[in-house]
Structure formats: structure tokens, C-alpha cells
Length: 380
Image: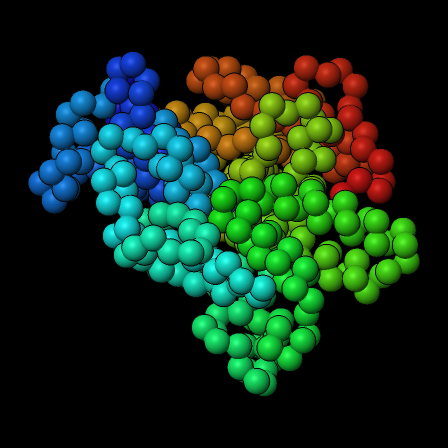
């Protein structure tokens, strides 16, 4: 395995990574806000690493990873995998109690807190987690979706947390025990990486309430679902995520088109050609990746030759590992422009989904389809 080549191809996104031995056994699990930067750091200034990690680097044979929607999701997934797999070089296995846990007390209205357990406690413990700071941030965000009490003794009147929407005030009977317990159960499932299960359950309940015309209660669940989506997907909203799934289905793509790059050619005074690249990540503009190209080898207004030139220049650098490989290429134009892009990608032995959009009717042209794809006017 060429580690340098593998490091070049890593995404600049949050996730969990794995060091494996020659028999594909997992030696170490870690989380990262940026997978590429984090994994590259293991191979520079090794003398600053813990001794056990240096030993592990002498034994690993391969690197694998799983992308996550956010650093919060990576934190929770890392914790679950460490508990499940118990990798040899994760120190959590040796001394779990030195790491932060979530503690849920066993009472009518449970208290939720972060703890470092010192002895056997009569409570539900979820963890361990490797970052107290990230865990605190995740719990605070989750508390806005499923509020809970944090006071050790129930007061006689509601505190500031009730006014801030962080506690449902069981102290003044603002919530029934059954409802409170249900919310704490969902909170527990969030930190056991079962958020998809929670969302599906909430959706079913929301639809049922809507059919029963209990619209106010249904709206509360809708807001919880939306908040959960935002917790796990830092950037795209629920609607934007749905659009990407629809696009994947309409185009028959193998993977969700999170990174989309668009190319266009402009003619200034009919003879000076300029190419432009725009980049979107999870439906939002990623302006740090925008580029402008001065066409060097083409004279006159020749969009076909111009786009062929900038695609060759751009994707030569992509193949060298200087930029991420996009999930989808969009080119301004019809069949000729799509053919030019396909030719450039074929020369570089790259297989990337692409399409062209004709300006007047917004018909979509795909490389291997003679007829354009026409989406309905209602399509998002």
C-alpha cells in the first residue's frame, strides 16, 4: 500500500479513522475534524507522539476511514467503535475512568451530567469519550432538542434553565414523568449513535399527530427533527439534504453528490477566453475552491476547445492529489461540452459523473444518453 498516495486522497471532512495491521485487524481508532490533516500529522514529527502510538505506527499496514457529517458525530461514533472493538492501542481500554462519560441518574426525573466515574454508580453511564470539550458542546446542543434537568435536588421554583428552554421544569410539574423519561431515552440514543432510529420514530409520531389534527404537537416534533438534522449535519439543512438524495436518484449516481464543481467559459470581446470554476459542498458555495483560468492554447470563441483545456489543467492537479475529487461535474452546455469533459477525464483515467445543462430549456445532458433528461418543473 502506498501511504503517501492514500493520504493525498483523504477528504478534508470530519470522520473516524482506523489503523489496521496486515490481517486487517484494527489497531487504533481515532476521530478528526479534518481527516486529511489529522492523518498526515501522524507521519510528521513522530518524536512528539506518545510512545504507544509510535509503536503502533511500526506495526500498521493500512489506513481506513469513515466520513461523518460533523465533528460531533465523529466523537460519538469513535466512542461506540472503541467500546465495541477495544483496539489494542487505544488507551481507553486500559483506563476508561480517566475519560469523560455522560451520567443519567435513575430517578423519576433523571439528572443528566458529564462525569468521570470513580466508583460504581447507580446511574446509566454512556461513554467513554475522548474529548471533554466536544462532549460538552454536543450535550449542550442536544439539550436544546431534548431539555433535561441538571440540578441535583429539585428546587421549589423554576430556575433560569426553564426560561432558556434547557429544562422542562419538572420541579413545578410542567412535564409528566413519562414524557420526561421518553426525552431522556432519546437523548441517550443520540449518544449511542442511534440518531437515525430517533429521527424515524419522531417522523412516524409526527405524521400520526398530523392525521389526528394535533398540529401544535406535530409542529414541536417537526422542530425536533429539524434540530437533530442540524446537529448531525453542520451545514446542509434537512431540505438541502433531501435535494441531494433526489439528485442522486434522478441521475442514477452511486454516491451522494456532496462536492459539485461547475465549469463555464466566457468570451470577452469575442477573442479573449476565460474559464471559471465554482464549487459547492453539501449544497453551499465553497468559495475557497473557486478558480478562474486564462485560456492559453485556444484563440477565438471556441468553447469546446477552451473547456477541454481547463478540464485538463484542473484534473491533472486533482489526479496529483492537490484537490478533492468532486462527486459530480456540471458544465454549461449541451452534448459538445459534455463530450469535451468526458474526453479530458478519459485522458486522465478518471471516472467522475458529469452532466451538461443547456441554457434555454435547462435540459440535462448525460454522457451516455442520446436524449436529454428533462426534470419536471416542480423538481427541487
